[in-house]
Length: 85
Image (cartoon, rainbow, N blue to C red; front, top):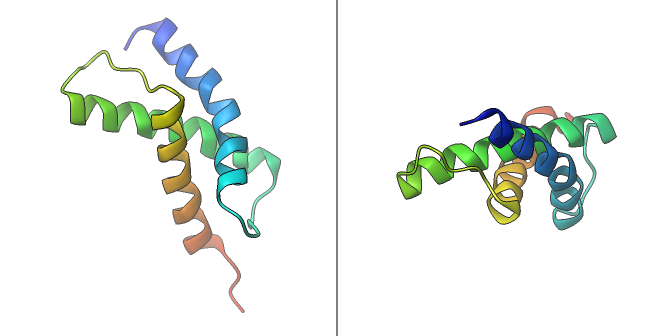
């Protein structure tokens, strides 16, 4: 991935975190900052999955693939750090 691909992935991830949170109703154990981090990580996960699925080493995740990655990470985050009661 090039530097511009990395920057685009991070910028997409900023918005994707909020979209993923809107698409997955329910309470989250984290706040806005955690959502942004999960969005950026989701964009990275989406890029990785896209590179694996499409066999394209230069693949940078678009919005749909980033949303899928962020939703997967948000679900895992809820399962791990959710309410303990």
